[in-house]
Length: 147
Image (cartoon, rainbow, N blue to C red; front, side, top):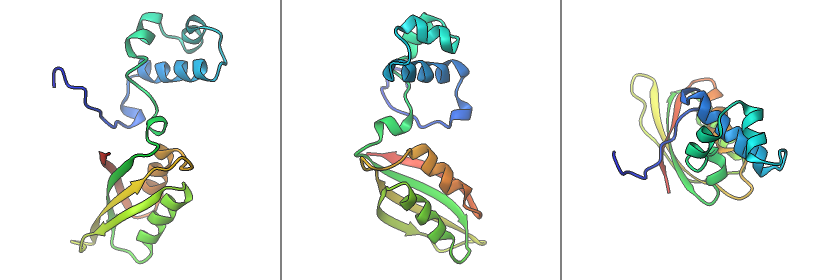
């Protein structure tokens, strides 16, 4: 992977604390809640060198998702109404569903693939994925592709 400029989607809980603090420092600077980089790093508790090392390499997923098409994969129980619940979760965030493909369930588990268009009016994509995962009977939701 050396020299790669690829992207990864990583759940927040898997990130080192310093990266989360860089995101918070960027938010403070962008919203002008602080007057300088020094004030931001002091407030979140990281060094300036840590901030400058990562400041351009980490950002909340929803900040860069507008106008994108996401392909999501989901494993879920074969239960009446569960697909509807998942689609309602997506709709509640204002995303546009482009394609839906659900496999024939095997051992009571179905695989679902969704292509979703992220619009300017779409809410926080991370929150949308968590809302999908909170639907009872959904085992996991993964981002397969971002175009």
